[in-house]
Image 1: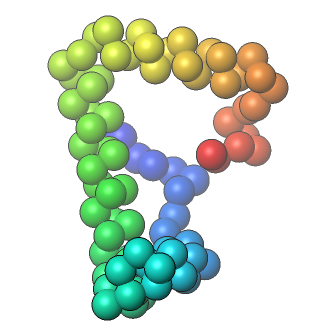
Image 2: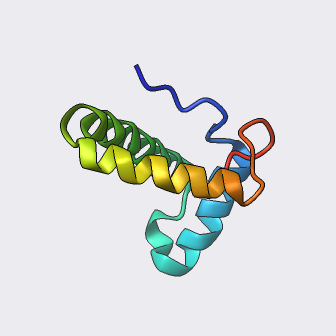
Length: 82
């Protein structure tokens, strides 16, 4: 099971999305809609990663290369979640 530890949909994140939605689509710029939108995309990302891991070995190679590049840039998992 893939778990997106370290990523949480916080009140601060929802508030920021509400602010952005006020420009994009003011009628839907409310906390409930924005939280549900974030939860939807979080589940889509997990589903996409699961599909990639099971069905696309070439994509895993690309993910590995991108991760190694990210590490080489001085990032590390313990203090970077972006």
